[in-house]
Length: 182
Image 1 (spheres, helix red, strand yellow):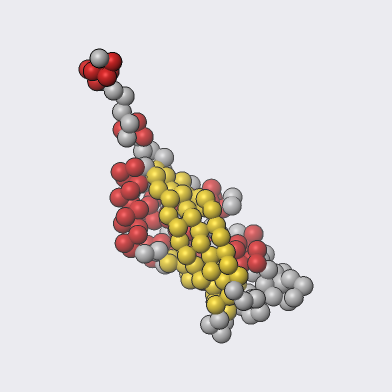
Image 2 (cartoon, rainbow, N blue to C red):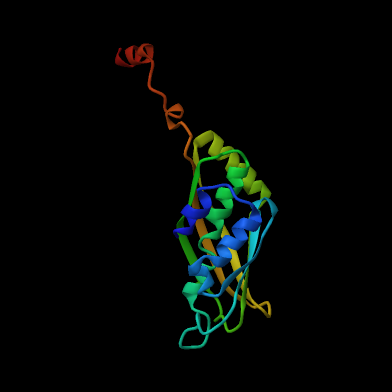
């Protein structure tokens, strides 16, 4: 989504990110409302309001709307998290995604996106050591009655744009070249 360029190009506060996402037209017009961005970018609470703008012929929420409510959050949260951890130039994007629709969204839906501290620490170590990482995150979507309606699996690619990949495979020294040729 284009929003990734807008909000990942700069380091922002959770409140600024929340309002930017609330007013972002593809989310706004699908009635996707960001309730909060957690401190430290450790998660987000999102509500999908069922309305004429996002229902299908069965009068349930479009699957695409449900997917859109999950799609940008992990890359944006991860990007902001790493920016606030001192990795100033990162790129994070949704590499692959899979969503299982369990029950139709007949009512407003709730999405709670959470980032686990242990996974964040492992991911930060991997990025510092290898320059990039791919992680998969699972999200459940519930209706207002607590009924599970969908489960999404998002695979996110994260890269430190300032990482020197040459350090992983340095050019051989003249002595190493000579030894390999003998």
